[in-house]
Length: 287
Image 1: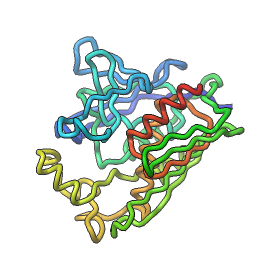
Image 2 (image 1 turned 135 degrees about the vertical axis):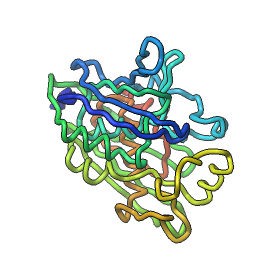
Image 3 (image 1 turned 60 degrees about the vertical axis):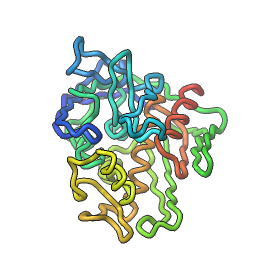
Image 4 (image 1 turned 30 degrees about the horizontal axis):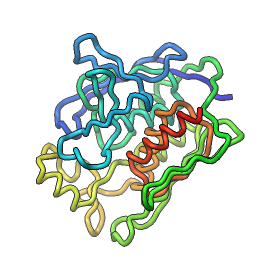
């Protein structure tokens, strides 16, 4: 059986937000068993709470530049309170098997750190977790599939506890990103912390130049994030040969955590946040 779990104690850190470029801090605290995962905007009056559930997904763009573009991150909201770039911390919690936690943040974005979930996962792993009662995960009777052009995600029923994830990445003929795939089966905190959580978000050089031209990311140097040029990383090195696929896998785990604990097998091809969100809605509805 799968069991509810929470961190044994609090963890915290301070960094900079990706889109806003402002100092931002976070803290993750144990929640009551059964409470689920929720964010709390401690910088706003009343410290409003935002549930980490697909029902709280916001359609608001993280920056005006993306008003007419597909989702570039995962933003949640409740009333006037909003928090963006939640996918990495949600992936770390799911990867560590944490079902009940409160995430405090003092601004509209989680800190980006190095673009991975490594800091969150390492601290949660070191803190350890406390287990509670058995839980009933979302299960499937039939295959669930969502598509957008060549991108698709498929979820199939699974008879044993846990969930497997596989991401297949294909950027066509781009010389710096060959076709590659990455996989992880949970529960497996040690494997997640070692092989998935450190994988960083990446950006193609041409996209990075467009964002700089639009006034974004001026607080970052190429070496601060993983920017891929024609001949590979710019002022940086890959942590894994297949780091782009591993990061897409990381985002998939974090986004699908919005459906709640799930028991199924997931295969994603060329998907991004927008399609991940559609699958999270479908899985939540299936449960």
